[in-house]
Image 1 (cartoon, rainbow, N blue to C red):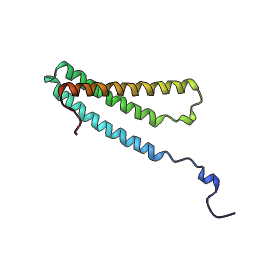
Image 2: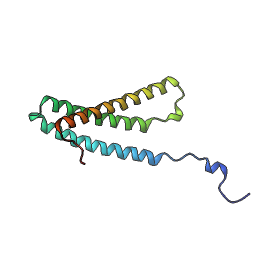
Image 3: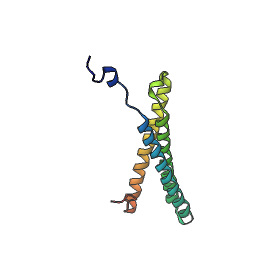
Image 4: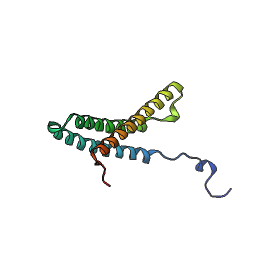
Length: 122
């Protein structure tokens, strides 16, 4: 036998720890951004109109959904799920989050187009 790597060593799965650390870092950054948006929103409330309040709340909901999706992805281990109905629920939850984010993005774009400005720097 040669001294090279064996077949079993090459079949080892990739260690997921760096990915989980990245998810945790992303969640912390999202939390910081959420806190900043919340403070800005609270400061603007006294002089804000109805549509601005609704859009501010929707923005906070958008960040909350994103954080929840990160938490779900961090704690979901697809290899240990044996019940198909549980997997169906998890897929359904993911689809609800993704569709909610899509609707919020469309609302954000429509609002920016109606004001003639964009929140995002160009």
